[in-house]
Length: 216
Image (cartoon, rainbow, N blue to C red):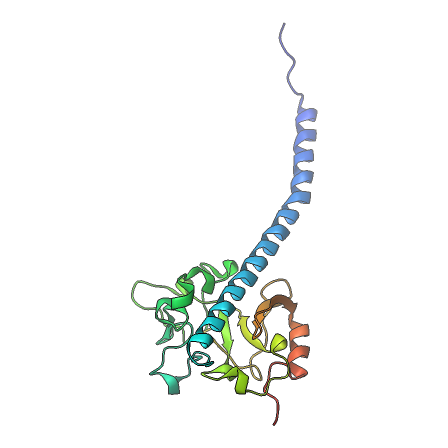
């Protein structure tokens, strides 16, 4: 006896059900991926903060150089040389040993658009190996000697938008926190605690003086 096949109406109903399920599930999967990337980014920042702590312990309580040109004779934290990133040449490499933690998953193969980014031979702006910038106020400084309001709220590293990042330096009273993850970004504080925060929350935090050095 021949088995009866699906009718056209039945096939259309099945297709419609699949389409409805896809419309429901795809946004869920997309949100899950975004959350996973955010958590991976926070993990990167925590590992880098630990490397900073290890560096300061080994170098008399002093932070690595941030990368200003007037300290060109001192390796900077991320290995920025002539507007390109070479993590293995940076001050933290002996503690990190991984170029992966310098880049958030959302930035992989995404072009760094800042005009001064200068790819070396064989590289493109998509190969830019850095997502995070260091608080310029910590440049080659001894945190214990600085007048900081609260180390748990004093920004150490922040995830910057690919349109703006170019040297791994964040000037807290000049640069504006980016909107990369949802409507905010990720950062890690001097005390080693990392989190996601909205751009508006970060602006308020900065305005309240937590990111800046306090007057004597």
